[in-house]
Image (cartoon, rainbow, N blue to C red; front, side):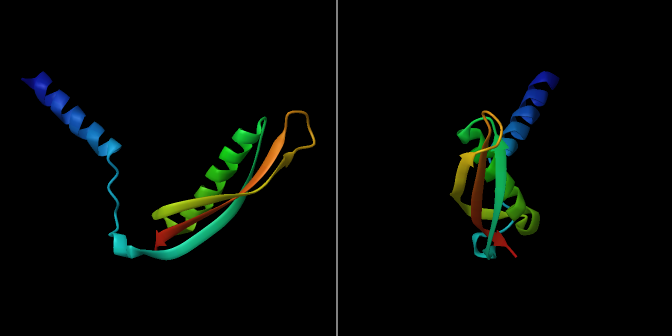
Length: 97
């Protein structure tokens, strides 16, 4: 019986992790925020992915809770070193004030 209860508790915890629950109602997402950031990596795809994550982190640093994410790749170019790419991405979202 204890094992069944432990499995049930673990399952409930897993469902909580898999199904995000927003802290704010949809009406609270009214503040548009945007930020740009760069990323450097050994491939174009990784550089863009890193830049996207960095831009998203900048928005979340002031927006805390945001929805409707949009990304725009501003620039991708070869870096100075071999197999080095630099990307700049802009992230936009609606955030809670």
